[in-house]
Length: 188
Image 1 (cartoon, rainbow, N blue to C red):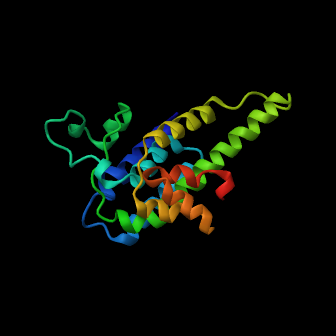
Image 2: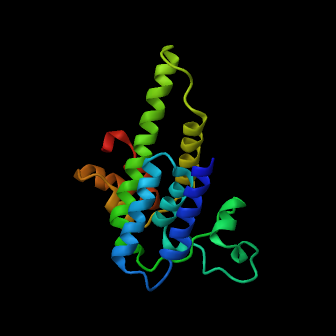
């Protein structure tokens, strides 16, 4: 539980303070995205996974700068995390440079999450193991909920699409839902 809270505070700090700062050098922002990727990969993923989706959303869908009128804007990063408040992500100045890391990492993580979940579910049905962990089922549910709402721009889809020409065309035809197409195992 403490590790999850620390992960949430850390990922909120990266997204709400470091990446939105106009003075953050691109190299530092790339390292921050790399840290988010490590948090997601090492199983401390829910807040970091939400932030990866936020990075890959179209900038139009992202929230404006926080206003003093909003209650959650008055909270510090740590207190917002402790209260479970998911503040909207402000505009990230280095977003275009970060997409080359974030978009493929998001697709790889979600594809691997679905694969692991399906393998464990198949093993459970054959009687080989206990049911999949509740945490993993929640991660799958979270990823699916984000995928339903995700609208990625052409830059994100182009970066996340597999290298095969037909796969890239399928992702482009899907438009703002092209990131979902990139997850299909037939295209990888």
